[in-house]
Length: 216
Image 1 (tube, one colour):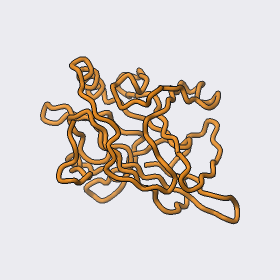
Image 2 (spheres, helix red, strand yellow):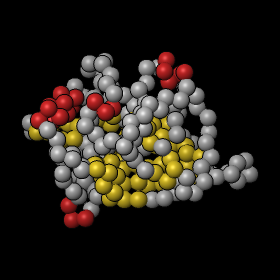
Image 3 (tube, one colour):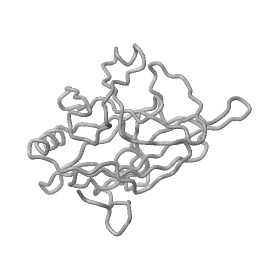
């Protein structure tokens, strides 16, 4: 699998739209390794979005584990959802269903655990999640879902991941999740290099610890 060049995790953006912050950060890489750059940001005034079914605030202490969960892969082109691990992404030792309430079940969510290890207030960068060689059938799966514009959907503390884009005009726009990959000049690229920005709020007069209020 490919590794960041010259020791730098940052990758050039796709033409015409520059990812900033969330799910797919930088150019898709045609390899099967996944690199994690994690940034826990300072106190944020409000959340970017809420995952409403069963939502309740959780107070984290410094160093507490923060679970990143994966949801179903979705496409507006096919309207057919697939389990996240239908694609050969990095896997935990044991895949477990992580639906927490009836609302998630009624919405048809397929929420499972992930191998990402995140701790509150601990910044990490250039962390390799896993490395594997794709077989031809696995490559075909990626090609098919890239062609059908499937989206990866992650959840952190009941907040859905959002990708923030900066347009050439300087304005920002947001998209739920991020694309499995893209096609450029007849070549397929997988989004496997991510930057996670986790925003939190602290109010010692109201509660102890930190509440996560944004996930990009």
